[in-house]
Image 1 (cartoon, rainbow, N blue to C red):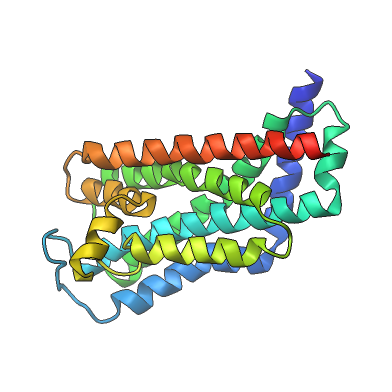
Image 2: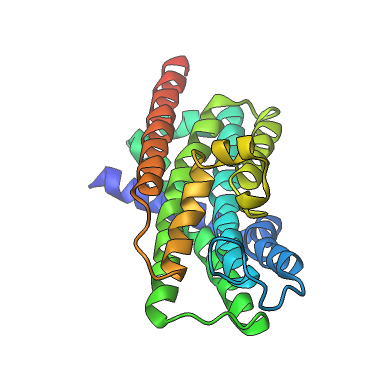
Amino acid sequence: MLNTFGTRALIKLELTRALRNKKFLFFSVLYPAVLFLIIAGNAGNAKIDGTGLTVATYMMVSMASFGALTAVLMGNSERIAKERESGWVRQLRLTPLPGRGYVLAKTASAAVVSLPSIVVVFLVAAAVKDVRLDAWQWLALTGIIWAGSLVFAALGVAIGYLASGDAVRPITMIVYFGLSILGGLWMPTTTFPRFLQDIAKWLPTHAYAALGRAIEESRAPHTTDIAVLAVYFVLFAGGAAWLYRKDTLKA
């Protein structure tokens, strides 16, 4: 009971801190919507080759996925690394709070911030670029992109325990932009050279956005994309758990 109460209290604290960070909220909630408008631009009804989707519809999923990625990856990695360095994590270990409670609190706070970033992109796409989908598609897109962001939340936790306070930002930025660009969130992978297309299809960001686009096209997602995300989640979550235990032994 005490452990449960401690976990809930930490989740509440993490949510409060995340919502008070205006700079973080801008980059995770508004930045993806602004990028969507810039990239979609004056494309009109032009369609992406091989998809049947307009540029606006295609990029809406990309930028919603990018926003969720920003919230869970950037937020988790930097906060965890800095809290380790400041001694906050060590102090928490002196309480009855279990390690999974700390990880759960970080994931929950990131997930709460990622939801508005998805919704804002959708609202902008519908209001400004006239994107129209069925009600079930909007709901399914929101759910799948939100749930899929947990893969990158686990990666953020892993990086937070892997890197020091000074090194965490450059490492996170390299991973963040690398996955975003090579995974096709900023531009269709069909514009890439063949060798980059072959790499992109095995990246978690490519599979992540592909699930959303399958919903837009009213078809079942490819099993390969689901399998790729599942494997990465196991790897990232397992890595985060191992790094947490390793960090605990050092304390």
